[in-house]
Length: 156
Image (cartoon, rainbow, N blue to C red; front, side, top):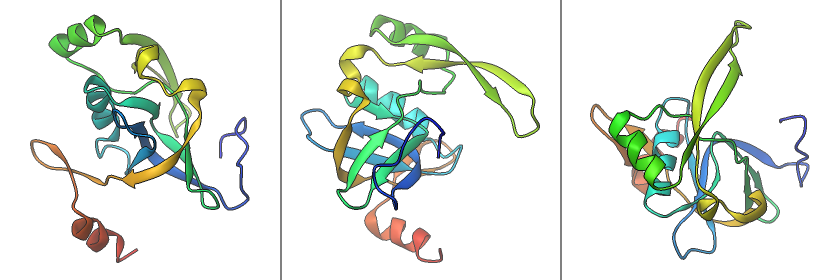
């Protein structure tokens, strides 16, 4: 757990994934997934479609209340030139980012910050409204059906 964030419940779960609020929705949709599965790309695309951003990379799920709290770090994706122009037109901005790799090496990159109108106020928590599992295919990122998600989770 990040040192500066206190878990609201002793059994709170840190989930690797993104967390967003659908347009007109009152709850949060959690997009869990391993690194590289496409949660950041999906977050950016959903923000472009009007979803509000609660967090990317890590979300805290409180099992006693089923509330989700996201860490509103910028979204780490590298848009191409045309996509970058569209993001700029819609009020997204690029911010510098620094990561320390497992090797101890410092990596400099950029990240995308959604405009304030697409951020959940105060980086607050929302009731969990749903979970969307993603799968990266050769040409797309697509949501898994409930049956597909269960078959992938069952061995674990």
